[in-house]
Amino acid sequence: MVLTLELPVIETKQETPDVKSVKLGFDGQKFDYKPGQYMMMELDVDDPEKGNTRPLSIASSPTEDFLLFSTKISQSLFKQKYNSLRIGNKVKLKGPMGVFVLKEDAKEIIFLGGGIGITPFRDMIKYASDKKLPVKITLIYSNKTPDDIVYKDEWNVFERENPNFKVIHTITQEGTDWQGRTGRIDEAMIREFSSDINNTIYYICGPLGMVDSLSNLLKTMNIPLQNIKIEKFVGY
Ligand SMILES: Cc1cc2nc3c(=O)[nH]c(=O)nc-3n(C[C@H](O)[C@H](O)[C@H](O)COP(=O)(O)OP(=O)(O)OC[C@H]3O[C@@H](n4cnc5c(N)ncnc54)[C@H](O)[C@@H]3O)c2cc1C
Image (tube, rainbow, N blue to C red; front, side, top):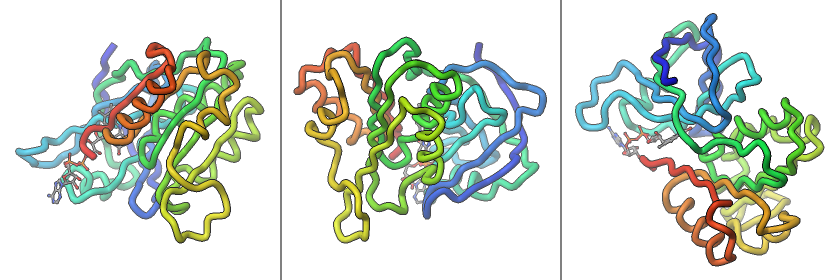
């Protein structure tokens, strides 16, 4: 059921130089949603061209007692208003919506994320951990620089909470002091972390170009189409 809600900001956090999170309280209006779904957020802006709503993935799991959103701050009026939200402000939401949701009975899942395209994955990974789902999960998370990693401190906590979960960071920009893996997500990386590539469910989320190139890569690897789930963040 699609709900219309107005929920209070309980916390804001600068996750990276250009990504900001807003945590909302349920205020007695906790509702059901599937991990991976999104909401339409409405802010009080007058933008005749782009409007006053944006779809934003829910980054918190239904097992948590708050709603988390994170977005890249741009020059748009909507994002400037979002950036100015303070504790106690009310935010209008419509939802939940979307079919990019966790396949709870999967044996193995690989999440392929880039930059801000991580939001629904935090939701799904936290949910699988809290529910102790017996699914092997690998997150391959690509960012330009180490400073761009969203929810940076949480990934290791999730790994400790869930022995079936592993995060692999890869950094694409040369010349940083990153000691770990570098370069774009490629076939070798996917093969390295999948025990059985044909029986793994792949989730891809991010800007259009990234989603298209990774889903094409999986297709050239002959991954069954029904095992590839995509969410495109239009607008980037
Ligand atoms: C299902 C779904 C889930 C999504 N989830 C998320 C999410 O979790 N997090 C997230 O960040 N995004 C998410 N998106 C994308 C999001 O909805 C927006 O489309 C995106 O954030 C761009 O919005 P914007 O307001 O920054 O840019 P828009 O207003 O859409 O404009 C597009 C571009 O024009 C530029 N621009 C706009 N106005 C101005 C101006 N006045 N001056 C200069 N430049 C300007 C912006 O910088 C931007 O680059 C999701 C999209 C979908 C479809």
